[in-house]
Image (cartoon, rainbow, N blue to C red; front, side, top):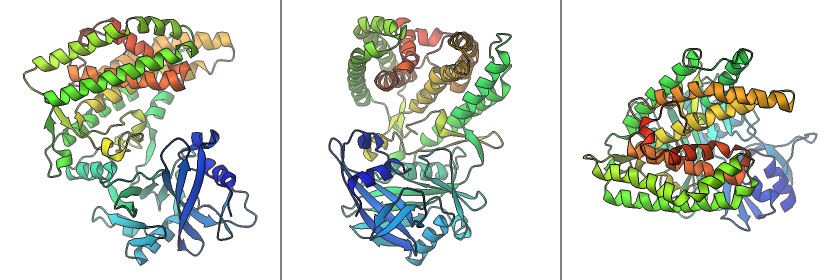
Length: 504
């Protein structure tokens, strides 16, 4: 019998746990498991976690019988110790062969049913059924295994989200495949877990494996830091001319984003993807949501301002003094432009969580977008909602213009040996990255400009979300979105159209 402490200690150390803060804060109250054997020494454990102050969570862990001499953490089921099975090279073939034997649909005690479906007729999965698998060790929480000779990537969900609606990532992948879009890895199959309420949850997705150099965020930060090291002694600024590889990626990112934008904006037999007009009702709802966000942001800033480092604290207090007038003026200016426009913008499905970390840089320097499930903190139904079509542009724009240069400069400065050297390196880096980031931000937008009122509002909205997160969780980084808001609001609405060389 596993005690709650043993279970919580095990889960805290595992990739499947998406509630570690609840464990450390002692809010985990109870955990139960329903078990399905799928090989002579392996099981699927469907976990149900109950908390003191949040809704229940469900998760599914593949597990393998542990050797007597194992040093790994284990859990006991029916008197047998088990450990994580994803590390085993026979995990993939044993699971897939089991599902094939059961006709790709199997009942799990507790009212569950696990179902596998192929999404194309390429035979990629069947050709690799017997191949071994290895975990993709990019981070401890990664739940992806690579199959065979890097033929397939099998990503298992860390947290099960049940709904009567189809998983948004499956829907988005199918839509982009219907449009023959090149922006995403091709999806070959999906695993779906059904509960006894007629709801389903994605439990795994099988896609082509993209041989890559990592995501564009880490790739770009590393690239910029190396350029800063090369230019430090001569105090050389980074520009589009001395960073050509990075700018080529940015240009391609703009093209790929436009391709995704065009695909998601096309009419479709699935009404969930049929574009609609951003009419007066949509604008009214949008304004009300913005009012709530502005209120929450002002409250969070006020409650956390004393924890901010100087000079961010002083800058933030000045921002708070004019908050209501500055924010209402900005929003009203953009809404006025929208109301006076002769044509309405489109409302359609969007990626929803689009930033540099969601872009893989392939071995041949192409780009592939990943994780189309939407904002992970939202319920399934909300992730499937349609939004103003430039929302993804705003998210990626902030990822580049707001954070990329700032984080690269921080990491470069941290390489200094003394506080004086760190300060000197930071002063150089912050100034040196500005020309490159400004040009990259402009080049990414392509035909879109920050003079577009909807794009301006979406950049503003994204900036507000960043402020909320940073002041509450990372006060040392709050200067990034606070600086963005100050620039945006103190310059007035028209500054978005006219500013050059100034970063939001």
